[in-house]
Length: 370
Image 1: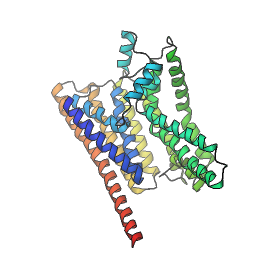
Image 2: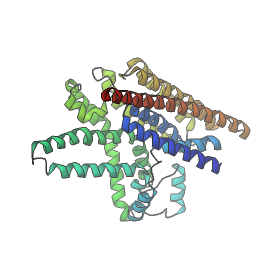
Image 3: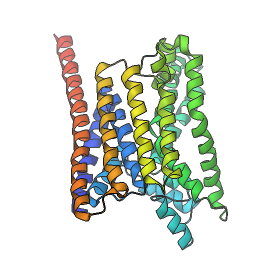
């Protein structure tokens, strides 16, 4: 099993690195990559559910965490550095038991962020760069224009995209930190304040984004607005209500998922069925509301949500309905094959779009040269 995990982890790391790099460069398939990670995040965080997952399925789910949370990027060095300065190891058996009960984690909020900490540091560098650039923006018009382009096109959208893609992980990191919160050490005070502040921000963020979209509703189609906050509704029908409320539903769903996971940790049957209902409601929303501007993206999202819904039927079995070990192993193998369908489907879509984009660019280059 260990050899399998290392081999699979290496293959997924290599593929994810290539796809992320190519998708960012070509842009065309980036929204489908986000869609895949959004779906996988729900699956990988089921490791916090108190269910009996077969070893093979558990290994695959943990491996998929590398794609879902961007953990193919090395982050252990930063995490250790933060832990040494703002955290401390578990002090007693009670805390160790509490950590195991939450599915893994630390009382140190920053340590719980894992790879997201690297992305946060990168965004901090961007903020410093924009702030530094602002000191020279009045030198001449070209510098001012460049500054405005960078601030509008990069600054806000980078922050918005980070807040959207990391929302689920942030919710889990915050709840775990608050469950294990300790005030005995002066080092942990900063971490605790960060966790409390982040919890408040996570609760008000959906409201803030909904308010911004409502206030800017008449101007959402304008280039100046799209260049600043386009990540909030990119690929959505901004002129229709279904597209305008997408970000609110997107964040509220993840907040609800986090609440269910920790509030019903000791009642997995209820937890699984409530999440199934949540997924069904979301499928009804995207099915009838059709918030996406792209027909292909809408269809891919429908398929992803359907495959996510069917994952829950395995979790129902893992919640105590099946106790026979051999039967569980067989179910786990079927579960892995089902996960394979989800991955292969999205990999195929992303690869085809990237290849098509490359061919289109090469064709344009050929026409320009002639």
